[in-house]
Image 1 (tube, rainbow, N blue to C red):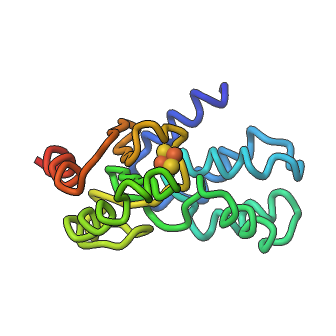
Image 2: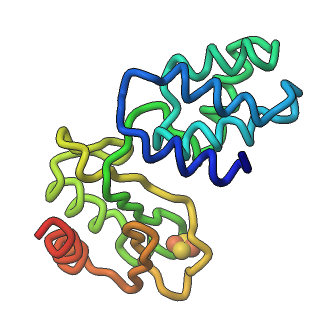
Length: 168
Ligand code: FES
């Protein structure tokens, strides 16, 4: 089965208790080479939306490398998450251009609205909040991205309104 089809099938499987089975299916697409670590982690995350703890140990065993190496890569790259993510991904840029145009105040407003800190998820996993170094859209600063939709020149009030519209 092509990798794309396999991933799509695995993502649509709802049973939460077959993590090992899903991991094994991912590994069948690889040869066990060290250079495959990042693509494997990306595939695992595309299935679970984060890297379940057992996936680090299993991947280390599959690639015959220390678990600390897998953990090091998983924590180095911001694309990887070690905890379950919220359904709606809220990202706020805290880069220089956004910072000087009030990103701190926007972050405070979002944190207050969602009741979580940056890096966290709401208890119902509806939202998770992340800060980003720069989206590369500095002319639009301050920039907020929700579920890949970009909002520029955001104010704290607008940020709250955006979240209201998503949750309603
Ligand atoms: S600093 Fe925010 S988009 Fe570049």
